Length: 326
Image (cartoon, rainbow, N blue to C red; front, side, top):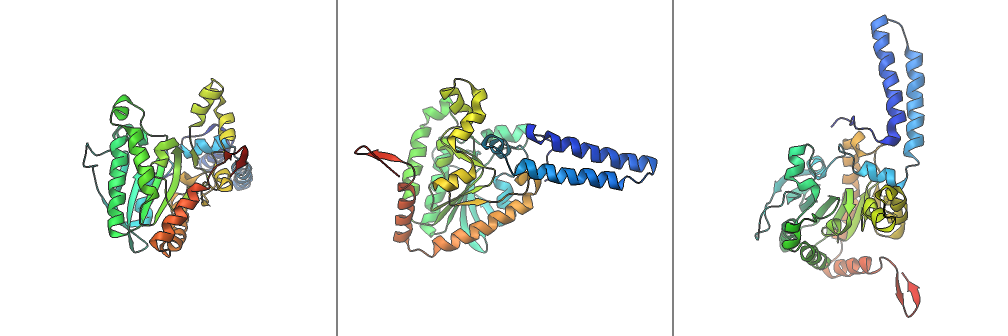
């Protein structure tokens, strides 16, 4: 996968410098004049500018990277880190939701069950995948596969990447809220190890519907939130243009989530985002998954369930008898 020609607003200074380097190289070829020193000077400036930009990204800028159209999707990571992926289809009730893919695979030589949200690269695939927004049958398919994994006691790996569950009339008619709620309950009691990874967008209950796992990991430039920044801005500020402010207030970025205990590890990305070096991102993901799977597979089933319960029980803040408790 080549780095995208799609340029985010805050990346435009880098793109202009890159254009200057390309122009100098072309001029050097056409005029047979050595412009090496000029090219090296601009390349040095590209490196320093990139470090300055990517070391101080705002929450909203990270949301934009999480949505980058060339960012690796679930199937890209599955192909890179797993072997013999065998996709399984259908929820056995209504139809096969292509926004969620799942099936058996071998990870690090051991059998696992994969459940993943998948977006589309081109217009045709985006429609096929419903832009990564699952419908009720997608969550029911996910649960069917997780129950199959439980039967054979193989770990479940879920890949979260959705703006949210599909909010259309047909989705509501088939009880999308009930499907997600059932997954929350059943995943909390699933008698086999599980790890979730937020690889891009982690939008609301649509993400949480496959996210109640023993460990939750997140890529450095991904986000995980109860609502999109635009949705929050529209509700609180009555203006979706306030999305950058909302993103900061929501604490959606990976390092905020790690500090709050919502995620267990932040997986580093190449400078500028995973789309700049998918192989490096996949290698980091594989290392992290190996570590966490090794840790949770050492627990017996009751210890696993108790640890999972305690993990989610202690998230957030609530009030009791007038006192705030975490």
